[in-house]
Image (cartoon, rainbow, N blue to C red):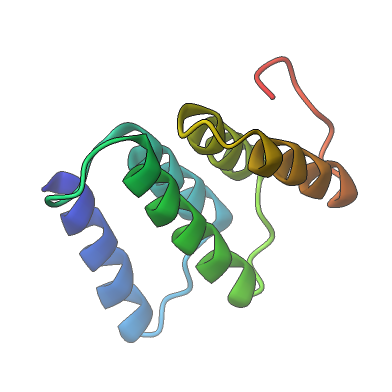
Length: 103
């Protein structure tokens, strides 16, 4: 419920003309990876929600911080999607983000 509320607040702020920062996206992505929202539960629904928010961030020309890539990689790993883990890692490297121990 709190995640849904956080996403609603983000949407309300954007509607009011405030841009969502990379740090805010990273925090929301981390929440989506770790908390179930609604009736669909488990790693795969979390991955879908994480991917949608990550794609929204890119569509709004917000440069993903390292934490955003980490969330995407963790979500893909938990959902047992090794191809997406590899693609996300390569996308991170291509974006000029230096891999860390977490990635």
